[in-house]
Image 1 (tube, one colour):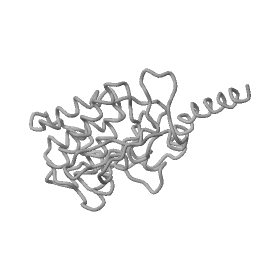
Image 2 (cartoon, rainbow, N blue to C red):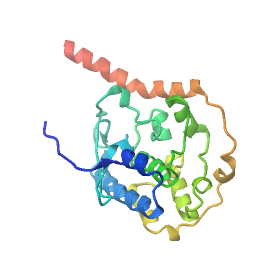
Image 3 (tube, rainbow, N blue to C red):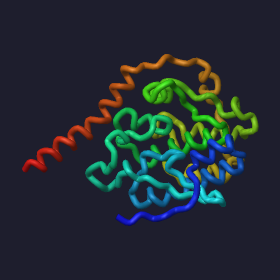
Image 4 (cartoon, rainbow, N blue to C red):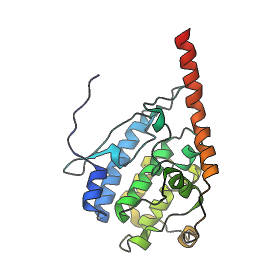
Length: 236
């Protein structure tokens, strides 16, 4: 196996060292990630585990997406993944549809980038919990704190862009990275909606561990089936 050497620091490290990014820098990085996503999606590949640990940032804020261990080719008939424990992606960035056992598509990567953008401009992820199941459940039943509540310097238009990327229903989300990039490049042209999320976020529903666990078990069914098929094939 030949691996490419890439210089830079992980976005996670940079965020930990520097805290919330200025708006302009956050937009620049998010736009660069959108461009990379548009390229891989154009080749039928969905990353499915996009997170700051998988983004390399160079000294000019150029980016490189790494670790395609659980990516899949949209044209393929089977999942491609590395570690079974990583099948569903990372709790802080996994999309609601992946939690519910769906394979996910380009909009799942858009969702993960929306989470990262929220984190870049506020200094914290939009959903929280004392364990991974609670983090996953929080994104299913609760709304995040509006970004402007944490950082009043965030323009209302950028807050609206973040909300559109974080829509629970994929059909309401940006359809692809190119649409996301268009609004990131011209946030002043984004129409700001009167969203119930701007008020309802204070009402927090309790974690429903059993429901989340059922979603996780449902998502693991393909892994179990594939494992059985591999065992049968090996014995044959």
